[in-house]
Image 1 (cartoon, rainbow, N blue to C red):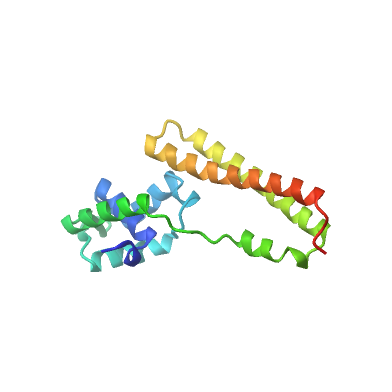
Image 2 (image 1 turned 60 degrees about the vertical axis):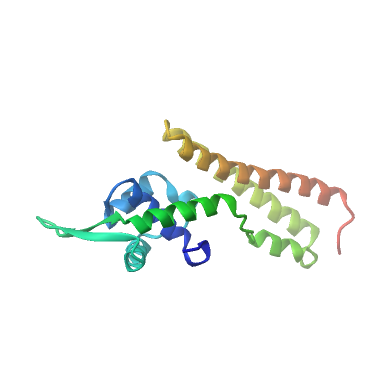
Length: 181
């Protein structure tokens, strides 16, 4: 099963189940507790949808626990372990381009006045500063974290800081350049 037919949500859920067997609601708690929504998109309702897909593909097996609450618990299958390893390796080694909407905005700069452009970029830079501070606070509040989780926060923060640096250089360039109009 290659990366092209395996989603990031599936990889995330599969990895959490690989740690130990889990229930759907428990997965939601782990995702929340580890602030995983800071760097991936997975909604509460999509957890159950993803579990169904993984079960259909034979990557997890469900078993019911009886008692006061009947819940479906999921555990990793041998095939699931192989797919987890293959897709984790692929996610680390394969470059996947991203297409931020910022670039679409930049290509249409001539549609804006100089003041509008500078204002928009300054507002974006202020929003970036807030987001960097918010992530740094979350990261700090959860210490100590395992090394691999620290690295996820480092990557996210470095990406935001790189964009902030680019905006700063772009603002200087645009402020000193004869305008496009």
